[in-house]
Length: 254
Image (cartoon, rainbow, N blue to C red; front, side, top):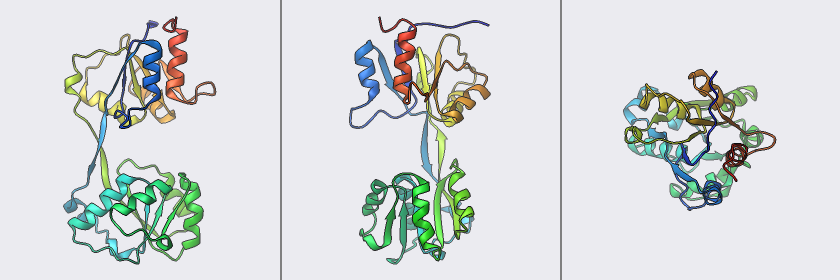
């Protein structure tokens, strides 16, 4: 088995560049003289209203909506507008976090009595939902949603309808065909899927692959690729910490 060890100088992170200009990756780049590029390998597209109509989901059959993200909010109200559905003032909203709840102000008048939110985890939000079992919930999701949400709703005998409002699709990366990086960093199985769709003849050779999370790690292995760096670990709870340890162990940090 060939062992590939090399110094890391150029890193491609398969995520959008942080809008606020702050990221642990920038600190890492400054500390070790690295070139770090950001590029989303996937992006979100809304389901066309014609396609949504075929699901026969009637928004007005529901008395409450569960939102896990801002994207879910955007695409719910987009579909409602395209279908000319007038969402009633009586509709209640259950959001995963306070930040997601405040985002609703983009579309509705914020009234505390009809907006509820958790601490960011669905487990916490579920405790709130359980107190409103009389409601009939609509859950806008992506095509690649986690099964945690419907599983917990079923377990607690909540009346709900889940519906796909948006999907994750592979981005066009053709402009990267002649660009080489020492390390590729992935945070989701979708990123690996995009890599292989864009470059079906991709040969890893000495390119280091870093993966965050068990599902991403599994996707790398299932694709027949070599995984060089896994996170999180007990010593490195973040990807940047894991990369820093990797760099030091391979002689970069000297």
